[in-house]
Length: 593
Ligand SMILES: Cc1cc2nc3c(=O)[nH]c(=O)nc-3n(C[C@H](O)[C@H](O)[C@H](O)COP(=O)(O)OP(=O)(O)OC[C@H]3O[C@@H](n4cnc5c(N)ncnc54)[C@H](O)[C@@H]3O)c2cc1C
Ligand SMILES: *[C@@H]1O[C@H](CO)[C@@H](O)[C@H](O)[C@H]1NC(C)=O
Ligand SMILES: *[C@@H]1O[C@H](CO)[C@@H](O)[C@H](O)[C@H]1NC(C)=O
Ligand SMILES: *[C@@H]1O[C@H](CO)[C@@H](O)[C@H](O)[C@H]1NC(C)=O
Ligand SMILES: *[C@@H]1O[C@H](CO)[C@@H](O)[C@H](O)[C@H]1NC(C)=O
Ligand SMILES: *[C@@H]1O[C@H](CO)[C@@H](O)[C@H](O)[C@H]1NC(C)=O
Ligand SMILES: *[C@@H]1O[C@H](CO)[C@@H](O)[C@H](O)[C@H]1NC(C)=O
Ligand SMILES: *[C@@H]1O[C@H](CO)[C@@H](O)[C@H](O)[C@H]1NC(C)=O
Ligand SMILES: *[C@@H]1O[C@H](CO)[C@@H](O)[C@H](O)[C@H]1NC(C)=O
Ligand SMILES: CC(=O)N[C@H]1CO[C@H](CO)[C@@H](O)[C@@H]1O
Image (cartoon, rainbow, N blue to C red; front, side):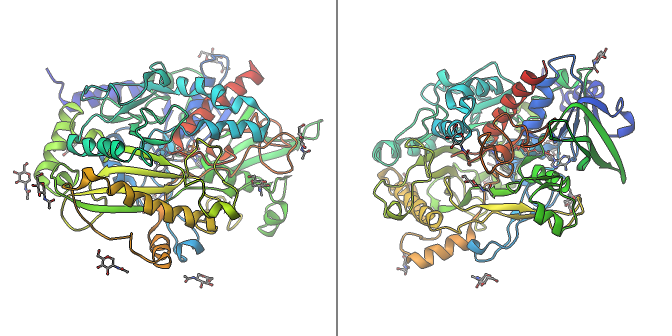
């Protein structure tokens, strides 16, 4: 017999009552710990989990956001877009006007909820190219960051899970490159769109030069088109909060997680006898009062690519001239803090009206079908609500003889890394006109544009200035144009002949200027920000952290989150953030065990 849903929820709440995720500072057992971690996102929750595997370590995790418990929009995969826009689960950031986007400012989502961006992201699971990690190893001089050495950390993170529809997954992924023993669930889509998927598969056969089928793009060799993998298990989102802070971990006696605790800055700097800067505490705000938590061993910043550089700069760690101008006393001159910010621009490759009712539009536009699907999810966590609309992802390189390479060195990490991503999905996305569609969403994966995260004042509670620098280089706009042509080529495969009726907007016959303008007027962000507290070699003249993630010139201060990646992966960034957390936790253990 199926348990009524309210009973299932009631049992979850009971077990959570014992878990030590606190809402109020007066409930936590003191403010002195071995480790204080700032930020309960992808990486922060991994570090909290792994450090408390050692019962001798006491850990406090401070998270500014709210609880993820029972947040239905964060649990049901199909509701992924409901959390975007101003809401209580968001920091509500906006970029500064982007010159390369014809001066538009665009919303810049960052999660304000336990789990961080893994609690509201698109759940797409992509690790990146082996070449990306091998470049991290090369630029930092630490072979520990290479693909081969990071693969065990992907396996510690990943709990490969059969899709809820139990369909035959043979030929849809390569089990040899996955792990069933990790913590965070990853699966193939648990709901199928058979007609659409057959056309996609057929297109890879008809155009194998540009779009070869790739059995598993998470093998390190990404090029080609393969089945989507997502951080979903049992028809529900698997976030770092539901996985790494599951009740059996959160109950550990030496772990305290405190919500609604926004860290302003690190306080009480002093110099060690080796001349390194060390901080005596972490200041945070809760309900209008300031508190200071102390870390005997280390303070670990895991506040993400926006939060981490903000906290560093408010603590006096950054470019001393820029900080002085804002009235922040410089403690440690590290001009790379907040610089080299890199994200992926995304834009439509095309939306086509299709000759099929087997699309997500048929559910989104029909209240009866929507409620049926919702009831099915409520009943058994199955049906169309267990997946996002994409069925495949495609990864491609620009032509080797592209004219752009006459003037610009290939920015990709290596010959197996793609320049362009194509997300292949049923449905028209946010298309207003009722109908059935398919959409190809594109991204430039190897942008050469760089932006920054800087402060607008010395008030730690003011939002930062986020500049993505989108499309400020010739390479990036060139790659975007190629991406649009690429999508058109995919849609020209013979298989689509009786399926595609017409494009909603024909991008193929626009002049170069008109196409550029279209891209600049419509592009958005992938929310994959990295490099704002970048790693570099120990002796480098730039960078924020050493390859062991300790802040250069400081003692007892580490950064463990996406901000340390020196280049953006050719992938969605949660898997990379998770393995930064996994390796980062091991590096901390190596120091203190
Ligand atoms: C809308 C969206 C969609 C995305 N889709 C995908 C996807 O489909 N696939 C994918 O792989 N990646 C996706 N990403 C990116 C991915 O989720 C992030 O790269 C990843 O979560 C970054 O991990 P992190 O640990 O660096 O930081 P985060 O996960 O952002 O966690 C940082 C945490 O620190 C907290 N924090 C920040 N400042 C403070 C402070 N001052 N005091 C206390 N706490 C603080 C935040 O509230 C947050 O919980 C998406 C991101 C967004 C925003
Ligand atoms: C974001 O905006 C929503 C709606 O206005 C608000 O409720 C929420 O508190 C804001 N988030 C933050 C972190 O201020
Ligand atoms: C964008 O703003 C800059 C600086 O204000 C201005 O020079 C430029 O003309 C603007 N571009 C567009 C497309 O409006
Ligand atoms: C940005 O990164 C590049 C390496 O890609 C490095 O040479 C440069 O010094 C960095 N800039 C800053 C300000 O850190
Ligand atoms: C909506 O879906 C229901 C149930 O499948 C179906 O009977 C009805 O015809 C649909 N309505 C429209 C307008 O397509
Ligand atoms: C499914 O359950 C949620 C509560 O978790 C409820 O708000 C919603 O109305 C239910 N939907 C249907 C169609 O039963
Ligand atoms: C739609 O599909 C049917 C059946 O495959 C086909 O007969 C018809 O010609 C198609 N219509 C269009 C507009 O392509
Ligand atoms: C592009 O093609 C459409 C129809 O396919 C046509 O109406 C339009 O005039 C064309 N535009 C240009 C600039 O050629
Ligand atoms: C750092 O060390 C490497 C290897 O020892 C050397 O090749 C490089 O030139 C050094 N760089 C600087 C800036 O000193
Ligand atoms: C370092 C630390 O706080 N250790 C504590 C971990 O939890 C056990 C059991 O509650 C305590 O006895 C330790 O003192």
